[in-house]
Amino acid sequence: MVEQTVAETIGTMARHAKKAARQVAGADTATKNALLQQVAEILDTRREMIQQENRKDIDDARSKGSSAAMIDRLTLSDQVFAAMRQGLREVCDLPDPVGSIEQLRRRPNGLMVGRMRVPLGVIGMVYESRPNVTIDAAALCFKAGNSVILRGGSEALRSNLALAQVLQEALAAQGLDPHVVQVVPTTDREAILALLQQEESLDLIIPRGGEGLIRFVTENSRIPVLKHYKGVCHLFVDQDADLERATPIIINSKVQRPGVCNALEGLLVHRGVAARYLPTIVAALQGHGVELFGCATTRSICPQMEPAAEHHWGTEFLDLRLCIKVVDSLAEAMDYIERFGSRHTEAILTENYETAQTFVNGVDASAVVVNAATRFNDGGQLGLGAEIGISTTKLHAYGPMGLEELTTRKFVVFGSGQVRE
Image (cartoon, rainbow, N blue to C red; front, side, top):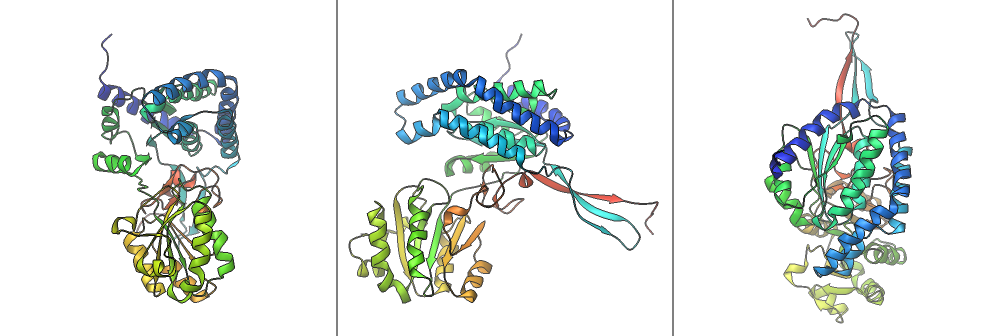
């Protein structure tokens, strides 16, 4: 038997995925939910085997000097297993969007015209570190009627392949093509390049990871890419803000989980409240261990912080670090966000309705938040259930991607003999 090259292996996987996509697109909700429940059960019975493979990945990562944070993301602990099983149950409980008809209306000639939710087809996902993403992404893509090819980080290959066995065992048990879910079986970077060239078989690529990975995928793909470059999120404290309410919102936005994409990276404060409010919020942030970088005006009020350099503005720190800038007006705050934001999450604190509406209407971001923390830009928090990522581009989804965002709509036309004049 002649061994396939990496490119040939990926090409074969893509063709199998395209064939399998037709089958899963026609699966009914009961079948899809039964499969997800079975995956949860098999995860429980295969936990020791999967964790054994996961420990091999962890040992390799440690031998290469990986950080404690990387090891934490890589580890499939009992808590992570519980979260994967809970996630599968939550996806089961979500309404199935496939086949639903929206905006059905009667035309003057009697035709009934509507738009039906249909799967995207074949999705390729390229992601880093967390092997639990393999289960989360597969579950969402499958419930939305898609087949999926998953290429996880090289550091998690053994873990991802073990999880793929669980998924494919459950698919076979339900009488479905195991190629509905496939994991790329190699760490060779050529596999990503080969996957990005499969435009005849794949319909969408979703990269999930650092900005470097996403730019690499975007620059090399022949397939449409749904991008999430980075989360440079800002919060503007308006002159009409409730300052007592502002502090816990800012602390939550920055401190609760500083290493995630919806954490606060830039704080803008209106000059009208700067002298009164900055000492309070600076003390609170520093009390939580946040390293602060301020503009000249900010430091004239609170000189204990570091001066902000040009490269600090618009930086995604993903750490307990934050820029603070005093602005003269709402317009200046919005101009700053336009220049340094990443279209992820932007927030305003104000009790002025007109100011809030101007901000909501004028700021371009996947989520615009009024009087609440930036951390709410999340599929679960916004009522979508699980999500596959947050898109910061507008085609075809903007913001958290749940089940509906893993489908598209086609027109359906019901007639009774009509012909076009």
